[in-house]
Length: 347
Image 1 (cartoon, rainbow, N blue to C red):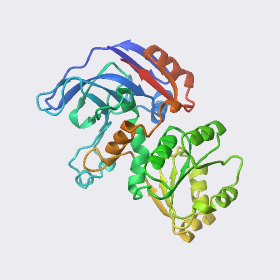
Image 2 (image 1 turned 90 degrees about the vertical axis):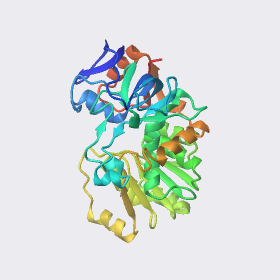
Image 3 (image 1 turned 60 degrees about the vertical axis):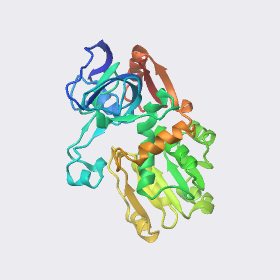
Image 4 (image 1 turned 135 degrees about the vertical axis):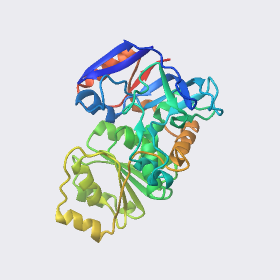
């Protein structure tokens, strides 16, 4: 089977590998249809950040069931499915409270084991989400990134009739923006430093957009006066400056969900820390995208919104190609962030 394999830093190859076979009764063989490159894959490709090499990445993918183990009774060959990449232990104190994202004994498809950037993959039944009828098979590859923002909304009690602010108009941010709008947010504001991303945010339904490179936090805060109460802020960019901006623009008793992963130290000046106290902000860390019952309401909601065509995906895609084209597009990044999703088509 064709596979996109990472051998070392920046070494992306298309290779023929043996088709995997079922080894256990609770396993399923899936023929992969569509797989997306995640920003978290870039350190594994360009900065020696993988758990092992050579590795087949890919944890955002969809496909069709090819074969089921004897204990799998609720799936049939031909069923459309998507990957649920986390495999928690289901037995630790966190898992028993349905805090699956916090499991310390987990494995992860496409990171701690080979992933979906290949024509076939064998996964545990627990790692498979059956797509609803009517949902496009290729859209299933976006389920996992959509659930990231939905998990943050779940942690802060939802976004219905709230003023939602998304800082960082990358893929995760633009998906979260569309989810907030579809789920009844009173307003949805996007903040970024890239004019093209802000223009896209407007096209996707943002109520208002602000360029934080051209405007100060005070100016943005002033223009947001009408939406400063009942505020939910999602920080998705994952840089110290945007975390500080989140605190600085927040309204009274705002809920701040930190979604982006920092790769540099955050130095919090006393005056900025004082704003957390004086505004009585709620700061919530959001990690991954799972809840009970497994894999969580986030996944059901994401599938429903996609089935109802409430989320536009095409404007978020920068490149779609077969393995060779996909590998070339990945190598061309040379370690830089993606400017739009890179999609692998295997069907």
